[in-house]
Image 1 (cartoon, helix red, strand yellow):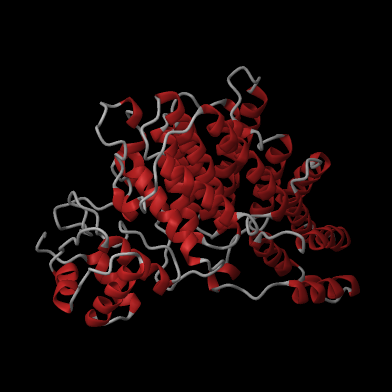
Image 2 (cartoon, rainbow, N blue to C red):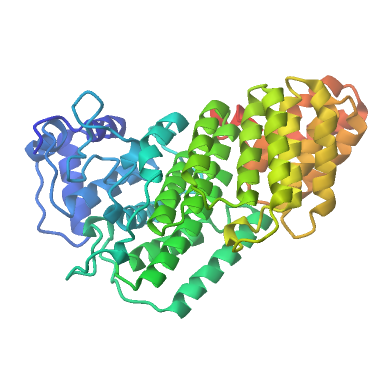
Length: 497
């Protein structure tokens, strides 16, 4: 017991709206349902958890996490509740203990436990698209500050450490009694192939249809990581975990589960670093940066990109650096910094051309091809065109080049290119061409589960107002109004391209 209030638990308790007595009764009921009928909690004990910082024994933290997850409609982990031992019981700055958002960075031995716990809670929700009132994104600057020193050091892989008698070296509170067992190289190879299948499906159809399958697979891998495998297998498993966590985050972002997405990106960075793959950790953080730009927070995206580039280490390949620069350029464009954007895009082009494929190919970079470089250039120029209309012609040029190469079934990217082209055409005073590309995008969106495409369509729709008197554009506006899903929240309408 710390003697200090658990501010994390107190804040979430306030959001939940329970009384202390009601929470005590719910804990007893939920514990019995989870196989612990002997548990007996009362009001005074709940008061000690909240007001005195007492950390209850297992299974109470897991029971509380399940209750708060169900109540708030979003994943709440024992870390979020401040119920992890070793001095991390929800202290805020000023208490003499350094605070990191969402337990970042957590201790290395906690990574598998956090991964398994978070995915288990996510699966339990079974409420696609629901985000509780208490959900919030951590600021990009806050995340990058918390993770800077951690990402710039090389970890000792847990499998390389001294042997322990108990193979379940991760915190059992987060493992949900997973029956850990050894696996071989063939099983790991199958998991690696499953990543490719999920990745292709996401690119073609969006994140909505397969998100839970990816989260479920990631949950299984988290359990596997609790077992001490030989180092070469353990590293590959961490790589699978990082790839699946990035996918889970990207799919969550794609369907509008923004705080959930951010948590997965951070988990992916942890998993990649545990496996000794700092470039992959940097790429995971670059996804969080793209998310920030999409949500209209480009300054925070730049903070994350600085960390992604510096934390990626010397092993960053030119193509990876090129991709990072395109994200940085998009953020600069969203801030109206045209000169900086052009300079950054020029660096991206130079790096992309410089990549001769000499290094070992990275499976997670196979989806960044020439058309993706052009597509990001189109998006950056289209974004800048809202500040400088002369940039629209460049957006059209790059969107046209990207579309000419989109032949590999990545329909979501093609939709984005069509919308970049349509928006640029409207800004360039070419409504006839804009109408053509907008309709091409609209035709494909019904077969795609990506909500980001609808967010981008809303952005394009703003440009149609000036041409509402044109019969074709008037008809297009009506079709878009009928097709658009109801906005999820105020944030969805204000999302930047």
